[in-house]
Image (cartoon, rainbow, N blue to C red; front, side, top):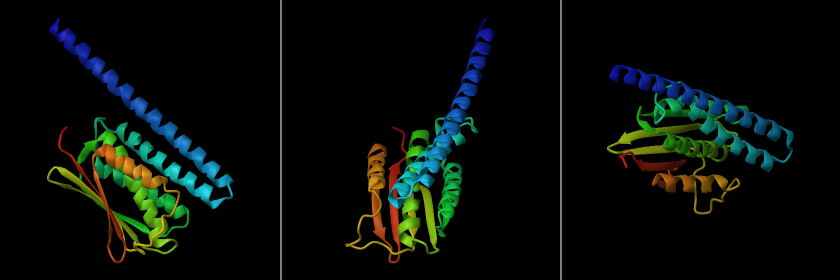
Length: 215
């Protein structure tokens, strides 16, 4: 009887894992479809401000979709290997920005640390915001390099996005819709993370520091 019960539990677990993988697959496909619809809508508009707003929305959705793609190809749905997830996300983001006429390149060095899935989604959105801003405002139409670094230091994760562009000054005006900054601030609070912006002279560094300690 004990052996039969054990077999039943194993079969139930296997069915649950298959179902969860299928759910993540469907969610990823659905989000990619929504992203494609937004892109079609963007292309039909003439106003550059409206197009930019829709493209920002599409990039955020794609960051979430990339997580679900990662989840249905791995056996662990509770944590994500940050180097694999962010590596795939940054490749896709660079291609998207290049298709819009931006010629900067993304370089990254990311430690193979496992991060809770929900935190990984939030990190993906923050990094998408920062990298997109660097492409648009640090370099504009000029070529350059955007570096994404993520290191595991003691029980903390330190994530930085840096460029060698025009940098910030005390008179730098807020550009874009401002929605991205609000999203980053909201995510930082949810992660209990510290956010800072440094003038590198030349360039800018955006930094997020969060705890990886359990609880």
